[in-house]
Image (tube, rainbow, N blue to C red; front, side, top):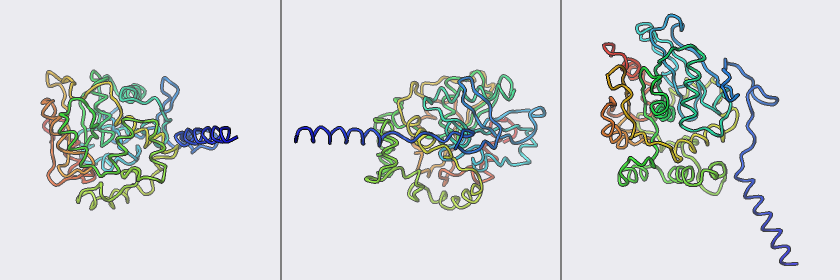
Length: 344
């Protein structure tokens, strides 16, 4: 009898453990019981929907088309200054700008098979659906900046230029010297170190780790003050005010959006960004990487190393800036103009 009880208890514990690691089903936009669809969407080749928002001058009048990629925990509506383009710059450069919800965020369908390659191909498909021509610009902030590396790898022939704004780095990219990436990794607060470690080594535990109550979960999801620089803390209220009436990023579930970002962003990549080749060998376009030297979330030391390894990148480091520096209009004006020679 004792053996039977022991077996039953072990089986029960195993079932509980398995269930604890499984996220609930997503609440798909437009599906019964799910959030409503309030913005235009395209249907991708695999059947998923991608939601987008247009800004700037009409497509037919534009001299340049830009696709914006939002960061962690945000949507097509709130890339800080990026979705409130400076009117005089937009008019001067005649820019058409489109932002979109990355898979699982906002009103875009989740993609549990998401990879750096799949999101780059989503961007290409969005451009083709909107008729943006053979070449377009991509600009991404934070986790969206990391997405731009995938564009440089998988769709370089479609790019007129690319801008990475405080792009998240993966500490396990093999191109980093071990001592440099290790030092940068241990500068993160301890609870964030654990979240990154789980996402990289045991991604199947990511949902459980970020929902259990035994240990501290993601400090970024919780928006702990420790993850912000001095400048970020000053800008935080401004950013919050601008986004307070906008739709929630995690309408369809945190696993499909936030947790997937951890799994993809810090997982095992099929390429190393530091092995990329210059997509513009004849200077027909340019790549720009912007970074704050006091960014707590994304270490400037790793961005400097990337810029050294890839000398064709135009590296811009802003003194005293943290992670939220694009929220400052002057900064975003510089970022927006940089790809267009003579307009800086």
